[in-house]
Length: 325
Ligand code: CO
Ligand code: CO
Ligand code: CO
Image (cartoon, rainbow, N blue to C red):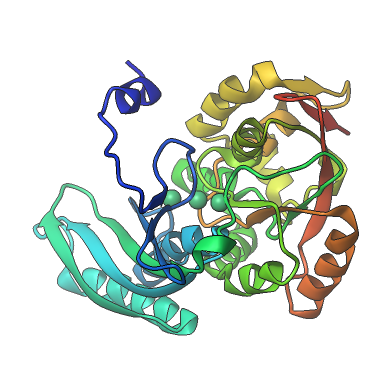
């Protein structure tokens, strides 16, 4: 039984205040408190993907908060979830993980006000983040319209690079670059996009660029055309691609999207897997009216989000994704 099947069999709870539930595969649940305020609720955690515990904590915190920003919400506070092997690792490691997370949250303007720790064979860390949003301004997976433009705010390739680290293929400079990208907050991009009234947004994480794009297209009843050469990639990633450092998740994602995708001739297996590479703390994929997209891209760059790019457009062939060279 796959996960979708399992989730389908769980009885849903009827509550008119649930504005976004688990059915639409959105980034976070949204629960209405009043006409003006809804809560944005999300939780995420994962085992270490980098060697430095401080950086791991910071990346995990940035990743957890990202789901609130992807909905157009504002994080207000968080709780930590920790698994830690007390016998195998010194306590200071846990201290560094928590410090990295706390400083990342402080950068976002929020505090971690509690949490829970259990013994576990390998470390795990993440946050449950609580955000707020105006119930009329929720930016969900559905809402894309033909003619809209697709904007990606961070380069992709973190799954490939962290897999390289696991396999012992290490390029220090590229690793540091990937860490910096994973630690960078989607806060500014989210705050800027709200001004442009986007139709849809998600953050790129485990399903990769194409997996998340497919979810948005399926939810919206639209299709899309994207260009590989316009898609921002982390500099240095091709060294890892040549060494075949693809994570298992990239192959799974490719299987998941393959039926929906029409590949241009020049898109070889490596390029397909890059577009399906599962990201940690990836960028926002934002869909908005074409004219607004050009101004929005300028504003992102003015605010230091240099890698942001327009990677394609929404078309009306429902369920089809065309990948051009
Ligand atoms: Co998400
Ligand atoms: Co998530
Ligand atoms: Co969303």
